[in-house]
Length: 136
Image (cartoon, rainbow, N blue to C red; front, top):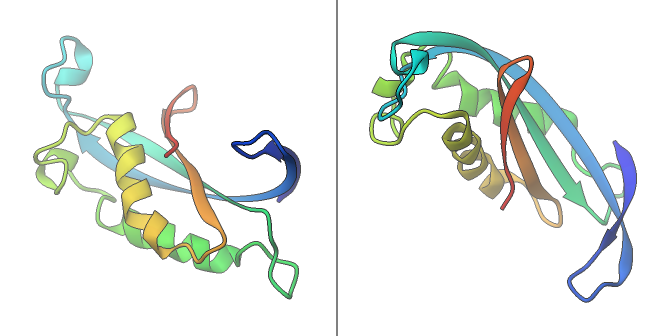
C-alpha cells in the first residue's frame, strides 16, 4: 500500500490509500476482425492487477484485506484459466482483447469491493511489455 495525494472534483486535496494484488493465468484466444498474427489462435500467460483505493482505513488500519481481494480475483480468473477465451462468455460475443478482459474483470469484481473502498483500475498484461487498463 502506498500513499498519494488526490484532488476531488472540486479540486480539494485529500489523502488516498491504494492496495493492489496480481495473479496470472494461461489462456488461448483469436482476435476477430483483426488483420495480423493475432487473428490466428494463440495463447498468453496473462497477468491481472487490481488496484483498490479509499481515503479511509478500517479499525485495524487496513484499506481492505489482501486475502479477500485475492479471493475475488482468483474466482474471476478461474473461469478463464486454461480455456479458449472465444468460447467462454462474454468472449464468445465480445472480442477477447486485453482491453475487454480488463473491463470484464472490473465488472466481475467491483460490486464485491466493500465501501468505502472502490476498485479504481484493472490492468491486464498479455506479455511482459504489453498491457491494457480499465478505469471507470
